[in-house]
Length: 139
Image 1 (tube, rainbow, N blue to C red):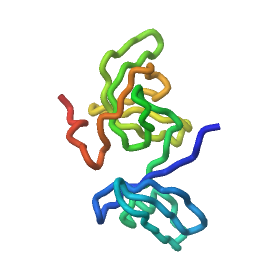
Image 2: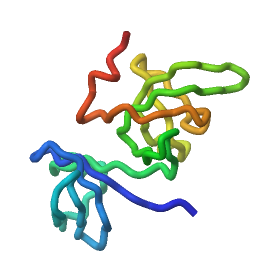
Image 3: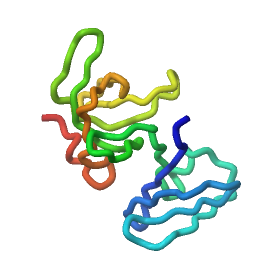
């Protein structure tokens, strides 16, 4: 079974926070290279609604890139993908969750998407949509 983990982009402090646990309305996390930070919500809002509360929540996909780095929603990845006999040697896009089909996708700059499961072992996290959005610009 895969580990269920989350991270959040703190809009106010402009930094990534890894959520160590989520319990009831309390979330506790650690900023990159910093001390723990407790965040309290008591508003019965969904994670999507929390985007307006100053935190953008992203879930761990359960997968790692070729260097062992965890893949999260919001990561920008580059790699090789194969789908129904077609191979793409260099695909760059943002990892998103498709709630309709219950799967992770990689959305390219042109708006098209490829399932994350179509990627070979040659996939690498090159940034994320908050700290390096320019990596998604169409070329």
